[in-house]
Image 1 (cartoon, rainbow, N blue to C red):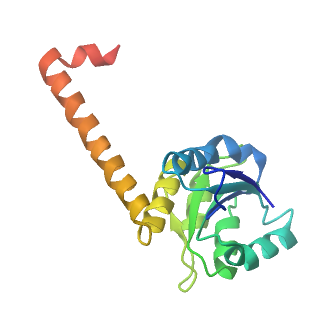
Image 2: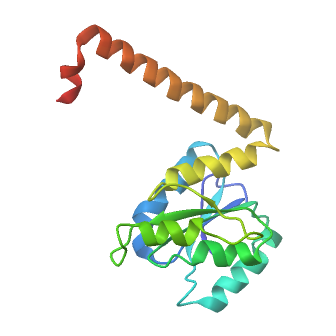
Length: 179
C-alpha cells in the first residue's frame, strides 16, 4: 500500500497517512524523526473524502499488517484522523495541517481535537508532524527497550542543547544570537 521508510530490512510499524499530497511537506517531518529513531514507517495518501473506501480498508486492516501506531495528517475539515480512529483499534495521532483552504488552521485543530468520548485521537500542535513522530516513538518505546534508550538519549540531547545555548548567551550576550 505504501512506500516504506526507516529500517530497510524491517516491516513498517508506524503508518503516516495524509489526506492530500499537499500535506507531505509537513508530514515528512514525522517520517524523518522516526527514521532517526530507527523505526520503520510507511507513508501514503488516504483521503477521507475522496477515497472513503481506501480509508475504510486502511483503517480496518492496518493492525493486521503489523502497524502499531497511525499518524494521520489533514487540513481543512480534517476528518481523516477521527474517521480512522473510529474504525481502527490502533492509537491514532492527529496532525492538524494548515492548508490552503484552512481558517488559520483552527478548523483542522478543532476537527481533530474535538472527538467524541469513545473515539480518542491524540492531537499535536498545528503542523507539528515531528511531535507526532516523537509521540509514536514513545508509544513504541513502551514495549521496545532499544527505542526507549533512543528516546532517553534524544531528550538528554535536547536538554544539553538548551544548557549549551543558555551558557553561550550568558557568556557572550544575547545580541550575538539575534543575527
